Length: 424
Image (tube, rainbow, N blue to C red; front, side):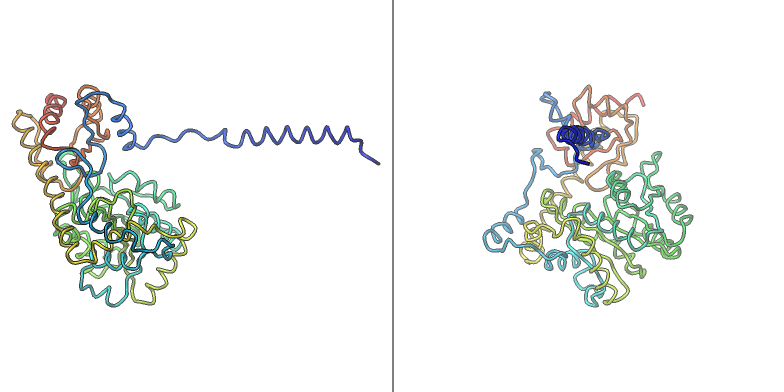
């Protein structure tokens, strides 16, 4: 039986209306994401019109005038590569030169692991990308494991492993009463974790606390992790930037290697080379032998392919040029030490200023801690007062970016901190 044109038209109109309603409702259930706590601080700072405002919330280096810095070694490297290099895709594993130089920096110039080709390594999108790539690797090949993350840690660590589908557990790290390491709690949690767990460790300049284990404590941690059959994954975002010495800042890595561990390692050139926006890093996994390293690297590349296909070229050229040229590397070592020394100096100056004001609180932890951040011990309410009354911006956990402090504002910051903490 023939269907009338009018009936067909009604069906089409009804279908069209249903389709419009369906399309208009596809994203109605999407709520606005919560603001990133660190980026939110920056937004509030930029909106503040006070001439006295200070931002000590962002983890990016500033000179003593409060200005961003481009290292001279980076400027020279850019001159050398400008117009002299191709702009085609890198391999999935990234720049071979960058990877080679990164491994030498982390594992040692004369490392037997490098000579024996036991390290699977790829260029990564800075430290964040290296962690994310390893998290996906862990989920794919050890789906029944979890990652143990220190309390506290960089907030994005939780996001990275959660979004990779890896179950999260925590272990004790920071002891608020002493503003230092909860070493006994840390060891107890490592001991109580199921054998064969993954542990995320900050190689140096722990973020956000600035509290690092001593060499002897690292040895005890290494011994216990080995006894339990755990896998240590290091996030090393501050090599050279913490103490001014890349070798010293990689001491935890060398201790674990000496103890015979297989390790994973994320490296970043954001802080120590000032390449924040270039997203330059490296992910490496120490394997049992060369054959295993080849297999692991192939899988890391396979995982990266649908994520971003190939890592970016320009930043890799900069970092590999700096590290691969003896004169530029010497200059870089001088400049990274200069950055570290300025921050260490600001720690001493801030502590001295607080003590001179007759603060009833102990401030030794400011100089005991190391790296970009100081975990001040201030409460969220005290931080709110700093912001509302003194226009000083930081995250509400009391983390101070020491890079934001300079000789021009340290007195003002000390006055404000003293005012909000003197009755504590």
